[in-house]
Image (cartoon, rainbow, N blue to C red; front, side):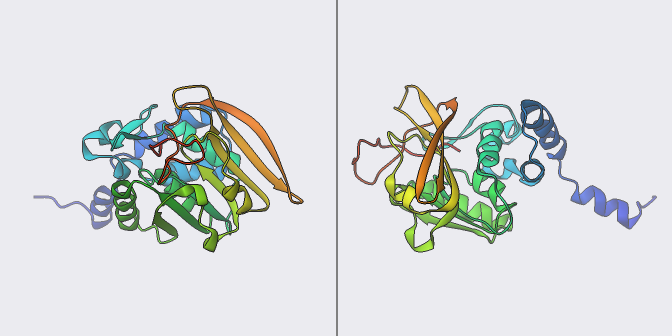
Length: 237
């Protein structure tokens, strides 16, 4: 019997069977649609999306579509994750707040680029599962909190960037307050089942500028109690 060289055996054992699917995803879904930020592309190439979806969904983890993750929630299509990340202009050293942890995928993509990610999930089952998976994947710069994201995470702010992954009827004032000078927030705004827009919020010299970016469809923002006109389900990614 012939034995393979040790280095070749190691290579075979270490090869990620999903790597080619991930590379194809980035080429056809991300780069082909205009995302050119090298840090975002490298993060999308690295994060093992298949580890953050239910096991029976892993074969489709890199497909160009959202996938169910349980509890009536979904993981967004890769392009939307890349687009929203790109809009934030993430850089090393930044601290980012995410409202809506979901599967943990968006947090993982950000964590490959920035210093710290603080992420809030109101659905305890999703948040705890994401936290466990992210820790198993080695992310020690992602901090998960179970709670109402409308109020943000003031004791950890202000934040250089904020990303919201559920559609709000309006932009929560507490999130604007926690956005650093020069910071950027991306948030879907609009009614459940109706026309929604990704909005870019920029803060400069104490003033905020809001720009419509892209029509989208997200699940509605959840509150602990139905206040401020918000609905009762959370999280899309």
